[in-house]
Image: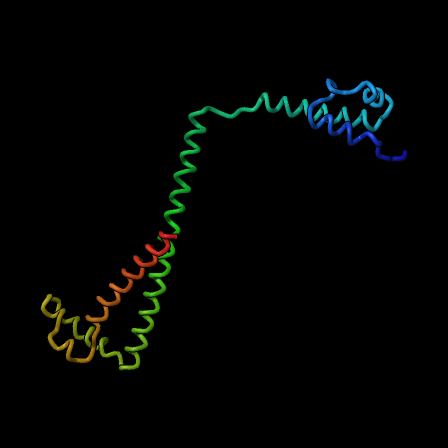
Length: 170
């Protein structure tokens, strides 16, 4: 068996692709199709595929319109939630990074000064009333724990808000 392409195969393929076969076929082309086995098989296979596609398109089950509308709304809401969550996640990561860096810096600073605030925490345990929570010599002892904690909390809050606002403009 020798496989060689037919010289009119391109013309037959174009006719089939445009849907002009057999109505717009010239008598000369019809005579060629009866004599050429390659072109006849091409027509047979192409028409079988066209019939199968038409059958599937006619029997397509799209579902109820209400279900389709509900799925579209759900998909739209999920997309909106993802779009809103991205800047919030970035702000949280940035705030966490700043917090960790600040905590490491604070611990390094306290480690170089001898961790005086640990002794203050040990003295706090016997006294459980609110007056003992704020000793008067706390600021004069060189330990600035009560000053650093509000500064740290403000820095974390402002950094998270700044990242959120910056990413929202994009």
